[in-house]
Length: 195
Image (tube, rainbow, N blue to C red; front, side, top):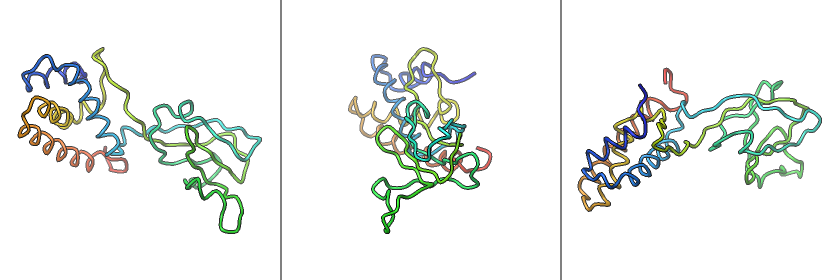
């Protein structure tokens, strides 16, 4: 059975011995999951798929929120008929040193991914990392609550202990949580076999 946010918060409150801190505990669990997500580049947070392109133009832009829900960062982007990935570029380097517009590159501009290709394409393959959804007590779960229970609990407990004036326990929880997070990154980051 999957670990839920409610179960995790209950365990945290029993350890903290402060049941009135439920709302803060929920916030801290969400914060711990977000910290682990942006630190880890975990294979479990990678979304892969295909996106439809306009096959009549070379330059296009896609709205990140529509094409890539909860987008955090791109891992790869490859037009369907290409045998190579399109490289990400700095938007300030759209033109090369000779004044020619760079092609077969993409960049993130505001809330869009922008690219110019050398061939018309009707679709592209992508892989991107997501931000975690904000969990609520309504039976929400996240893969980290199952596979990284102690790490997430310790990272959530650290600021809670600090908030009640127990700095020693806060420091201990933070140190344990970060050590566990580094171990999980080594085990589960994208590219590690058998994640």
